[in-house]
Amino acid sequence: MAKTLQEIADFVNGEVVGDKKVVITGIAGIEDAREGDITFLANPKYLSYIDKTAASAIITSRDIKDCPKSIIRTDNPSLAFAKVVSFIMPRDIARPKGIHPTAVLGNNVFIGKDVALGAYVVIEDNVSIGDKTVIYAGSFIGQQSKIGDSTLIHPNVCVRENVSIGNRVVIDSGTVIGSDGFGFVTVEGIHHRIPQVGTVIIEDNVEIGANVTIDRARFDKTVIGCGTKIDNLVHIAHNVLIGKNCLIIAQVGISGSTEIGNSVVLAGQAGIVGHITIGDNSVVMAQSGVSKSIPPDTYVWGYPAKPANVAKRVNASVQNLPRLYNTVNTLKKKIEELEKKAK
Image 1 (tube, rainbow, N blue to C red):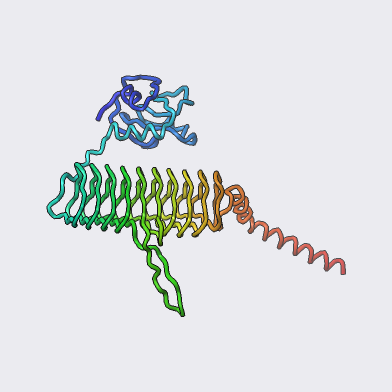
Image 2: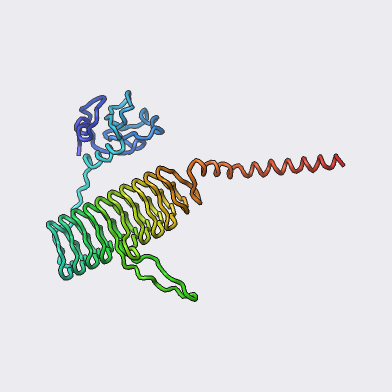
């Protein structure tokens, strides 16, 4: 969908510097863009591409004053570009409408206005589904669960019994919410299951990726806070409490009864032990193993995780070990030679 640069700037509350009548027909990254595309520059390390890119226009920060291309200066280039993507190339996806004849509904099911249920969806007894919610084919909603308004559940999602899901939640395919927590008591070598009778609460505006598992609490509740975004292949164990606006990246594992504050970032493959707290605004860097509680506003890295500045120094020291070994060996030989001469 072609747009002029001024139309795009108006849409993102930006300021055009250059030709306002440039017509944009596509979007691309700054390295791959061609004539007719708009791109963006958010990371200073790509600053040199301003002169190299073939894009017809660039979305930049307000710090950029001069540019050989027409630009749109904005407060947040990444956010502005994300908005432009849907403005220029909206995804025209046909959502299911109405209730498919193969959908199976239990007793005492409440369905709000404009709800869509795809083929072979199963809704068990005493479930409540809010207005404008869409549930795609093959999904299962367990008894006494509640789903809010304008929620989108993709194909083959399993929502177990007594789970609460808020408004405007997105859940991708293959995800299981409310599976039993991993709890056993071992007696004389035999593992006896501990009943998991709690629930899961997913608050408003949460997005959950594909093949995520969120376990129900043993007694009380597992909670995912409002605005939190969860990537694919994440495991969240029983009784975990996750605050608002967190980012949890692929292959993170969070053990039971851990409490995570607001605006926390857990980068890819981070592992978190149980019964600890991670403070607000903290960042756990990729592949870190967290074994102790983390105070607010802290960056940690490594295994076991340490404050990032400490972990980097430790890692730098480890990289120097071969050279240190050679130095010690050389000194050892010199000492042996001096001892021989002294005899």
